[in-house]
Image (tube, rainbow, N blue to C red; front, side, top):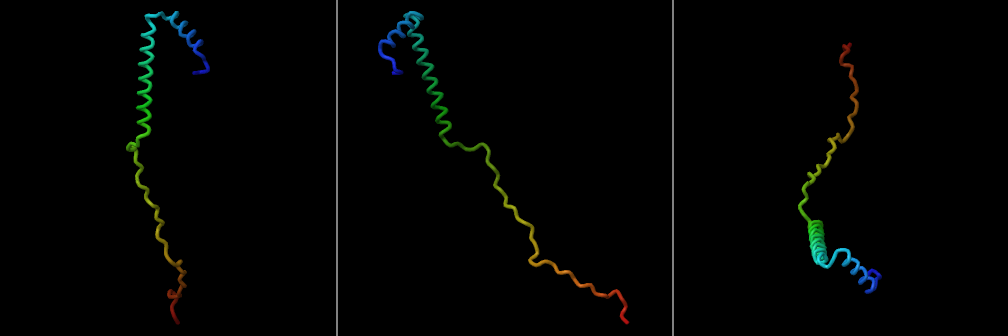
Length: 89
């Protein structure tokens, strides 16, 4: 594991034993185990939270379609002016 043989692991373990003492090693191992378990629980909760689809908190209102104002079918033709205002002779 990690490219280290059994001899290297034994030397590391002995150095840790000398630094912390035989009485503190079980306490350290226990606290590391608890921390690892808490980390795994938090990771699993976060993973299950992100994987399960939930109800969206914001729903976008339905879009209304834009309707153009009604336009006449044929363009209006200009009316010819009549000369009704002039008296007839």
